[in-house]
Length: 544
Image 1 (spheres, rainbow, N blue to C red):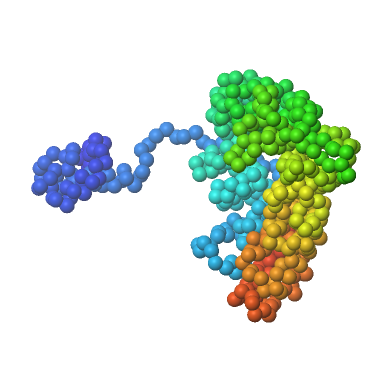
Image 2 (cartoon, helix red, strand yellow; image 1 turned 180 degrees about the vertical axis):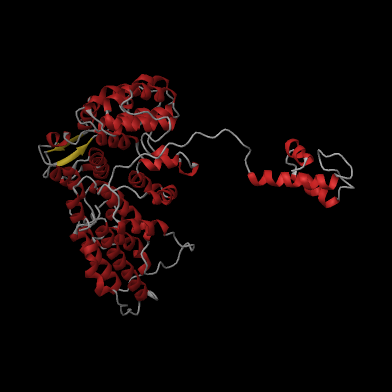
């Protein structure tokens, strides 16, 4: 390199655009920046362009080397079997089609199988293949429902990667201890420092993680700063006490009943009412019992209701909202809140020693039955009381498609959640056998997966009946999608007879037979694929 070139390279900034302009105009009309005019100007221009080109290609100026990254932590879990690793790669590579609607065809939707695959892999305790982690994090980024299972499967290496890519920072927020400043839960000083100095999201994550490990320590941490927290933050922190709610929380929750925020007071009252032995539950039981009694002077014992005539300050402090919503009477509004918050154990003693199924069968005077039973439904859901839920659901074959207190499908679904998985599946199967599938979608959503055999048979039989009747097939697409994910894979062999295109009745929807055949083909293929997935996750036999 000439002396001039060295001088230019050392002193001339990278004015690339100016150099290009000078070359286009000519050095007789413009002198390059930092170069003296004269006979050597064209040569100096080329030297400056060469130096600038090298600089642009190099991209970075020399600098101190960055600190070398620490290696990713080891994942002690056993590796996936080879077949399962290949299956995971195929599931992660599948992407929804570009078209937003239309017929799905007979091919399974692989992305919809990914949640079940992750659940099965987590249950077996496998570690994620390192090469699959980027695609797994990308999938979890796009689907929040995948995140808990995906991050559990991805393990500590996912958090290591997430600190290097802003697109994956959600993993640091979602995983307890994932944040860069999150302390070890065994480090009291680190916990206290993060609680006092951390961002709101970090504090919520910390409180939730600590609550699952040491409920008393989490509550003590919250009590320290409770008076100085913002109302919206107090509400979120209070909500974290739902996990592991216990009688030891009562003293703190009682103090929260006097909070200046109405939302905080209502949440504290709700949590206390879920503790049947709490003082608030006893107060609510006394108020509710004063409003409901059995009139034995009638020919048939009848429940009579005398709703509250006012909502006093003590009721409001215990979480009763005084102002009724539009269209609701004040007295019925207050009554519903009292009955909902009272322990369900109050009623057998108050109403003649009767069990729940006899209580809900009693007539209720003066059109109070709907309000009273609806409040009992909400109480059964809140207290997760199986006996009362069973009584309020009634028989699945009842003409009103529910029990005496089940006022909507959504409420029946919530009542079902209090029953064990087998009883829940049997009840929904009976409902489908009587009422068909058109009303059963919400109820199916609360049943354990895979569906128990009686429920699976009821769903398949109802779909077959709908097909033979020439029903409009697209109205069953939601149930068919649930069946693909929830039917036991062993049911695939029973469905082979449904793959042929059926004869279409004259009043059938055009093309219905072809659609039904296609949908059943997809269902069978998906079930067999799910069966293969589970088999691939079995531990590999050691080589001989």
